[in-house]
Image 1 (cartoon, rainbow, N blue to C red):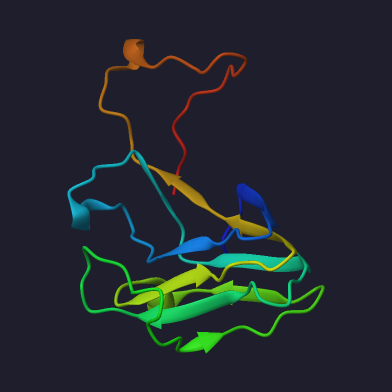
Image 2: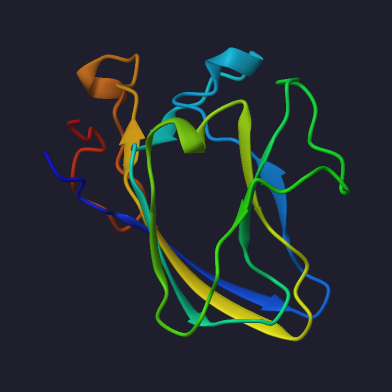
Length: 142
């Protein structure tokens, strides 16, 4: 079934900014971090304002606890122009592949869409409290 995107990120990069190399996890349990949420398998993005230097890139690194060195070889750097769209899914999102945005020379603007999944809360019905301004139950089906 197609993803239903409910999370949007608008990234405004200025000169010298970038996105640190990382890989995506399902629920982050592989590093001993228990989270109440995780992101779906598909990540969609569009580059609105490209930069001559800053671009989405992929590296490989054998240590789950570390990060690729800044001078580690780049497996792929996505050519970018205004309107470039991308979909990340499958093996390329997960270890041993790391993705990042290289340092921007002037300015880069991108939009990322993803799906948020929430674990069921461990509580009784009387313990469930909506967030301020939200009258709905906080449970979200997968």
